[in-house]
Image (cartoon, rainbow, N blue to C red; front, side):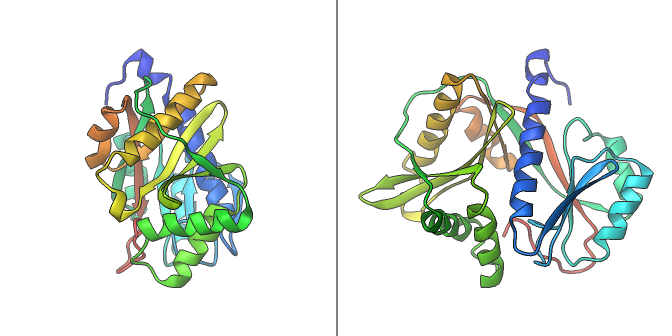
Length: 260
């Protein structure tokens, strides 16, 4: 994929934000630990879900891929994330030689401008309130997963204080929510969700625009990852694609669906 010089400058900061956020979430999942090994960061945990069983920030080589396979075979659910700039066909081949298959790809986007139509976002800071809002997020994304999984994901979302949680309120009800990860002057938008009865009314776009404006005033860039089907919607809000997040797994029969 070709990148213009302007877009190219946003790739590495966006990648670092993603790595930081994934590792923070993984490290705060019950029973999980994060460690750095040669050519990658690893998260391994007792919960059988990729939120705490993954390899990221990989520099693909035959040795690294073989080590990842060794770890993945020990777990029922394990994902490997290839991120820019290590997201070309040659890097795919290194993992595929070890039996990994491409599961899906997410678009990595950055904001190029500030749009209009913003709302007030309320930061949730009290621990019990963070847990309640995290449960709201989990219910939107992972409603098909067992209760124990949802509970663990909610705990991982609520625990790290450096990951800010915001909600948009209408008549004292949570209409939408978002997790914001600030790392190295880049603001990452994660877990953006809107309650079913508030959807298709502009809540999601208003939340995004509010975050972009706030980040712009502080001189910060903004990044996010999304399904390909949502890329055009984010483009209408001033975002542009700078790369892809490619997710690999061994897929030895039925495994936990990371997307819930």
